[in-house]
Image 1 (cartoon, rainbow, N blue to C red):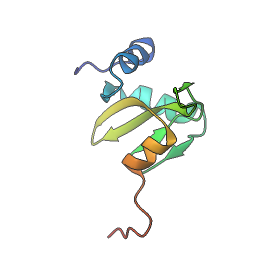
Image 2 (cartoon, rainbow, N blue to C red):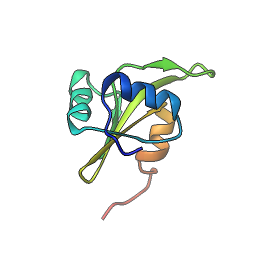
Image 3 (cartoon, rainbow, N blue to C red):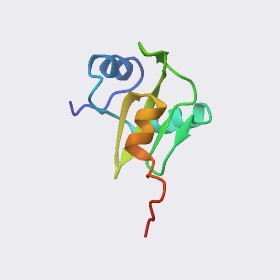
Image 4 (cartoon, rainbow, N blue to C red):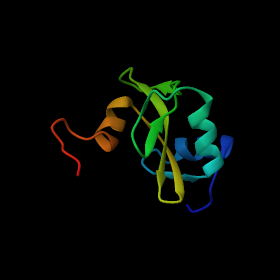
Length: 95
């Protein structure tokens, strides 16, 4: 999937492809970043400040947006999944 999606088309694609990062636009990335304070964020990604739903384990699932160079992507993640992918381990020293 290379088409950059927004709004309903983006949410539908994220539902249909839960394991894939869905291409989106820079505009959508910034709208979602500015709509509410993020639930959590790293240098290149954030979770929108309000959960979209809860998973079968009762954990909140958020829309996650990330930037890779000049490209933008979205995917549903829990806070734990976000931390696994974007938050450095304790004791990590960055140069």
